[in-house]
Length: 420
Image (cartoon, rainbow, N blue to C red; front, side, top):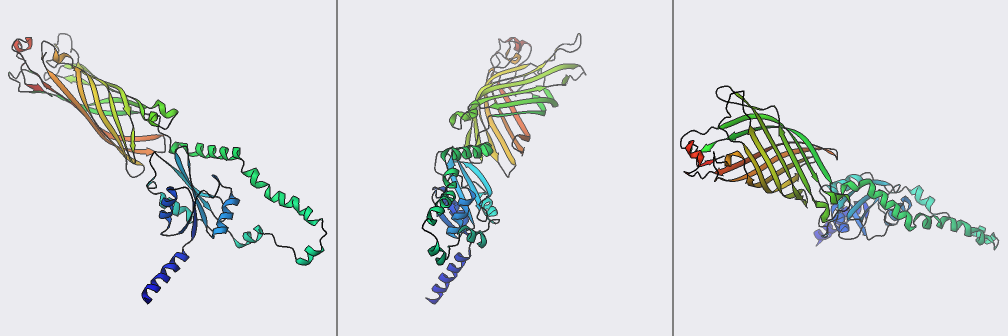
């Protein structure tokens, strides 16, 4: 029994030694902030006791009445929670941050919020005693009050009215709305969805084209170890300019890759001009899931690879040109790692509607083809408007050639089971 009493006394002493902090917020955020503070502070929970954007005098008065060193407020406005930490010594802001409220009740503060609040509270101090004494004017001595004429209370009335006048003048509704709008404009980018993401890049790519089950060993293979290309990409969400709802997460996606300075060389040394280009367009969505953002996509992609005729008198090599026109269905993702690092990944199926020369009568008119593409990369955010990325893409098309003895290509001994 004695041990239990000692434990209770020790716990009370520890709680008494913790600095008090007023937490003024509606639920459920109030409970989350209290849980984040109770290890190092003694939270005093209140519900909207202070105004939306309290003046320093209001903060100081609340701190003095509760014996606290600081006030932490949380207010819901325009789909986002605004959390502000005020210093009890002067009523000024120590720090503030915002996070999106979402449709469901908040179950946890954003990662690192508790550390951010505790770091700000380390700078907080209680009001000085001298300020407390100045706040309460001394009462006049009884003799003076008895000797004052009867008209003296009437002289004090203007003084009392002058002291009470600032409260209604500081807190009319228009001024509050103006302060809320100012606060939103300062940090609206933290909660507003990105409307446009565009980029340009440089790529090194390679290509392999070969056959399976080449019956007469008469079909040429092709290999490009590396070639340079430029890439342009853009994702635009027009609804994000005017709303933060579902309409802000439906957009258009464009991409262009253009190869330059590449040539194909035959085994006899003949050079052939070569071109390669890819263009895609489609619609996409955004599904934010905490630190992960999914992006389902559907669209159309055109990809060509062509080898021109060589020098005068040189025949075109036995490599068919390809020109894919494909329906593309896939999903991309963006994952936040340790700030400012993030990762991107995606996967898509391609259903070719056209494939180019390889489906002509002289090659394989009955072929069937499918394709896929995948990508993986890492990125570095530089500020709020610039990113650097490094990644790798993989694109693959495979064929069932289905040769027929009546095909003209069979007479040219172009017979194979498949190609990649």
